[in-house]
Length: 206
Image (cartoon, rainbow, N blue to C red; front, side, top):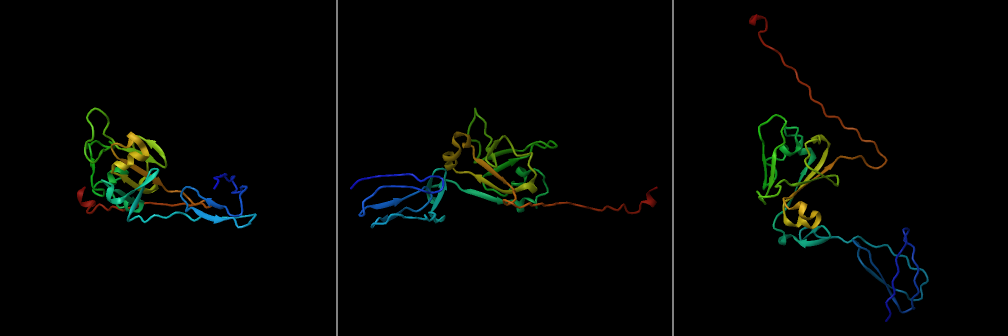
């Protein structure tokens, strides 16, 4: 048996010389591998199927997968709609009490950023702040984000986050995904608040 290989172009076209008894193996990362015998065919078109995982058994981490029971922590996801119920405009303060193992300590100063710790203090000499990732960009904090613009927040507490972000994720990772319109569509959202206050017995206080 001889081993020959080729790579398709951007449109999926390919060419390969093979014997009639040969078997062609089509593979691509994230898709199921298919084996098709030539059998005197001059043109073989293949549509690969996506490879699916049972999330109850495995968890995708970075460039690989691991069994869920092998992870020492978990990934907590917070929907953006649930953040609207918090009276605070700071998205991190809105996570307080919602994520197990996430400690949010308010300094008490007006407008000051809270102190965030995941799984306690991990180091003495280096920073203990978690890594913030907003739509794929690394930032120092997310105080500038309007909670109404957040689609979801994921808190990575397990060491497997190191497989994605390296040592920067040693203190945990907080991933923020903001809202975006579908391709070719314009999406507009409005969130407002109005209130009325009446001073009782105003004339009698004069």
